[in-house]
Image 1 (cartoon, rainbow, N blue to C red):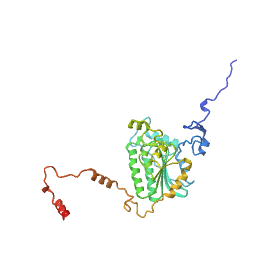
Image 2 (tube, one colour):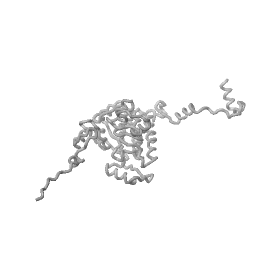
Image 3 (cartoon, rainbow, N blue to C red):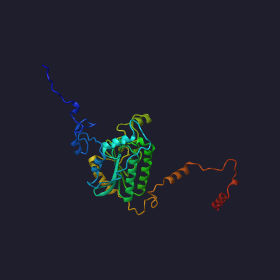
Image 4 (cartoon, helix red, strand yellow):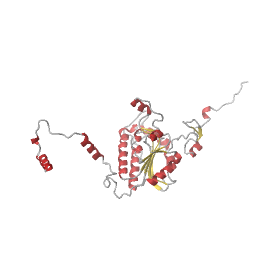
Length: 333
């Protein structure tokens, strides 16, 4: 008579992914409900898991105060880009997986009763890549902050510019920097929070232009990858390179703040950083100390670098124009 052996459940089913999460830092198996109660921070090693845009807004803002704006903005396919699948199919799959239209959510909310214009990125949507929609939402969030004279907060989590949109994605760097310069001239506070990861074009543009730059612990922050950086300088990188603590030690970041202390930190900063009264308009014409004029700066730089063009070879001083002679006589007089 054949012997019937007991059946065993495969080991991979011991920790169903919808119930348990393995910490990538310490290897501890964490119960998802307990992880959510701790704001998705590992209780063993303090590893900060990535948060969705909705969870981030719930963490930072007063309950029931968030009013989303530009929720209908959606990326188009200007290049007809196809790699392993067409770009519209990638966008549709990301929309189904995250419930978002694109990788950023922006609107008006309040922190301890203080209104703020906020834009939050979601790494789950195509790696938080910055396309035309993300750049537009950051720009509009800054414009709302200028118009309403309320602080601006941007939470970055991105792998960089979205390659499927080509030059249109790269132009978002210039667009966001331009509107943030207007915001600075208008003397409206801007708080930038960099989370894991903040890299590429997002790092190279609006993520590091805050009046105060904050970061979560052990967040990956940098422009190019570690291997590219090491190959470029042909040297071994120091320990912790491109982590928030390393950047803080070198003066690139103002504060590294634990997730449970982020809201308190923002409240304190908003008490100190208040928008100007706006009596001088946007600050560009009324107060030259705060207005940066790129064209004027470039003109002054050109005057210093480019030598003055003298008379052509073979010409004599007597060939000067009557206006130059009159100017010289006036100076001598």
